[in-house]
Length: 179
Image (cartoon, helix red, strand yellow):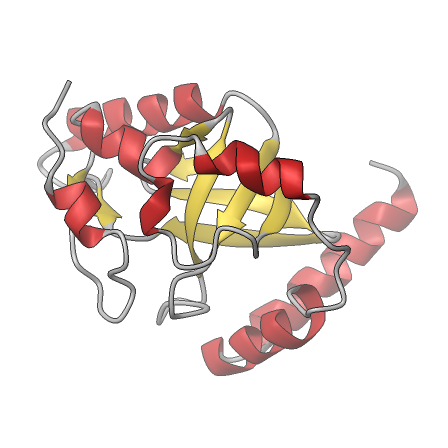
């Protein structure tokens, strides 16, 4: 990263640190995810329609595209969207935490998450909420022609968990038979 890019990233980070979660949510909605993005080609929407489980996503034609920065754990990642680094929490699933009695399961869930993503291009789909109480973007995620949230449940590394009001895919996740 060049010096200008680093300074821009540092400045944005400092601004976001100083904002409340509500302010961050407003900033994200207004500045990053506005409707002035390029129209999505129909062939991309059609391509998503053939991915297992995506029919539960409320609006498959509206999404953000990000580049994977890193995997935080089994159900959270960092992505770069339009030059900003954003933490994303997967909707509708839960994985063990590193600071719990299930440390080994948490490590395995994070590794499974990395394996499913294995590319830097990430497609992010909204349900109802923009962010959670920690300021993380809440999204269904598609990468490598896989519905990541569903893949992690199917592999047994995550369990379905309701987080109201973002429950559009909950019945899909609840019906999973672990592979």
